[in-house]
Amino acid sequence: MAEKIRILLAEDEPALAQIVKESLETRNFVVFLAADGNEALRRYQEKTPEVLVLDVMMPKKDGFTLAKEIRQLDKNIPIIFLTAKSQTVDVLEGFSVGGNDYLKKPFSMEELIVRIQNLLNRNKLQQESEILKIGQYIFDFPKQTLSYNNEQNEFLTHREAHLLFHLCKNKNQILDRSIILKKLWGDDDFFSARSMDVFISKLRKKLSKDKNIQIVNVRGYGYKIII
Image (cartoon, rainbow, N blue to C red):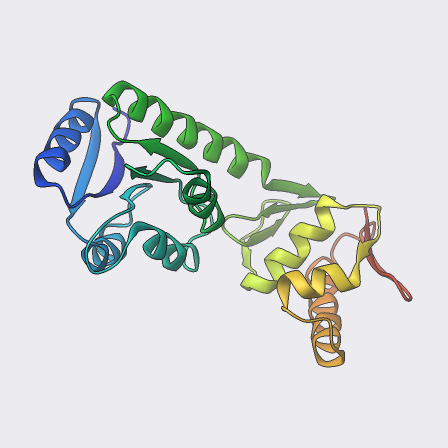
């Protein structure tokens, strides 16, 4: 039997929350309820849901603020906003804080369920595409692991994993030094650049068992991984 998908539903209207909960549970989901933003954050930390369905207008902490905080912890979890608002500026704000979809009240349960399934399928495909073969290595970006010829996994730090991911997505091409520094370090100053050099050295060492892999410094431009 397939494992049930865990959903966190943050909705401050008790009647609506109960209807949505019961409808989702008939479709083989497990639903955790929260009536305000603070409770939703606690439930997220306790229950590790796989999908978030967040009302925008909630007491104590609104859905946009909650999503922004959760995105600091988890970049990949699908987030759907429920709202009575439909102005373009509100929709844009929802996406800017990390939302993946936006459903206007009143909505049909069928539509909500279809959107949840679409986001789950998209997330699964994205994660599968982020398991990369680098020469004789397998790099699992979501899990931040590197294995050589099916040996025991070596764990990478968050920054090592993201740097290697960007190198691999641009394999045999120059990865612009300034762009990646701003993306991963937040600045392209001298000290950030020196830190990046250290991480490049660490990655070279971790990939050293396959002599066909090179990470080369293209002076004045950036780095390039050659496979």
